[in-house]
Image 1 (spheres, rainbow, N blue to C red):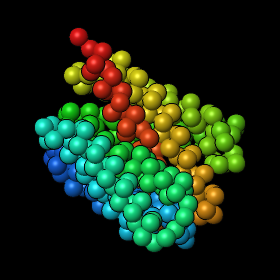
Image 2: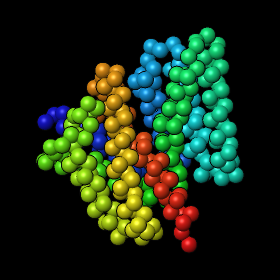
Image 3: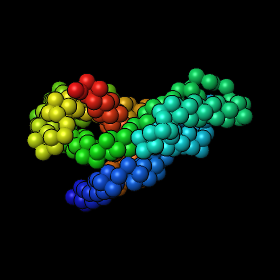
Length: 272
């Protein structure tokens, strides 16, 4: 019971911070997620590269992630700056990482490049996509988070109640096909309710978002579970009482957020 209370209290603080930052605007959101991105990069490095001299150091990985995050996150607030400048900044960061490897005389460029690309693609860019969603309108991001939380809750409750068929037992024994479908169903229902209240975006977008968020967040969850299993650890960290690390809290988010942003952009392009 105490563990549940601690988990609930941590979750309440997390929700309040995220919703408050989104309501305040994209700059506040950027400032909130900047340290989150840095800590996530540290946990990511520990999961896939801890003790490996053939990859960039922890400090370089964290600097690379936070710099790529800022370079990408500020694009919607400074449109004249341009996305091509963000791409150039990321290439410079990759070059700096390679130079760090050359300086230290390590010799597996393939592994080094894999860590650099995965850190930017799976840590920095997903967190940066939040400011893009908030910049569109804060309720777009809030809607996304509501759908994400609904999917997690629906999948958990359905899996506990009727889950029988394992989704990927060797990776995450607790996940079931019934839970996945329950999460999708719950999220579809919530998407319909959101569309009734927020008519700025069409129902079709919210319905598509529900499916995309459910599937992508599940894949993100499974990816982190696979990495933790390979590393032999239960949690990615211990920062969040009752939850584990940042990656434990944001695992599904890391694929769902950029997927949501891409979906909204596609709907904007296909609109009248």
